[in-house]
Image (cartoon, rainbow, N blue to C red; front, side):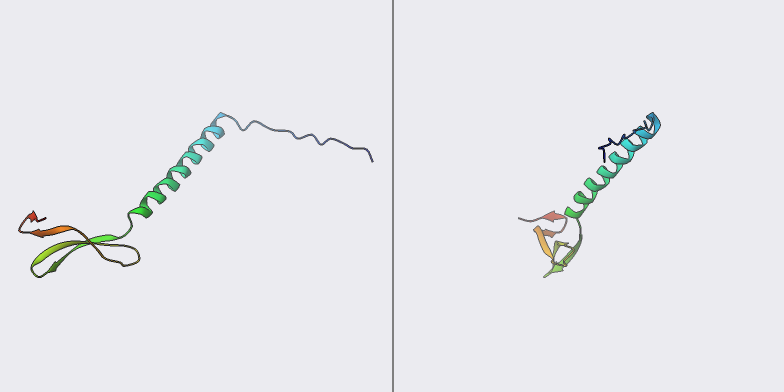
Length: 79
């Protein structure tokens, strides 16, 4: 058998389709970036009073509470 070259024909998708592809790709990359950034700040915060002193507590998705900073007493943070 003789080796035959297969001819591949490419059709231009046009300017509108090209712009739509670029927009979709940019949107997907922005979504991926936002998901990575959002994962870094998952969890919540709440105030907890211990012995008459308010502490700001941060919770993680693993439910590990962590005390943040100095106690908050009467509208002021005490170091």
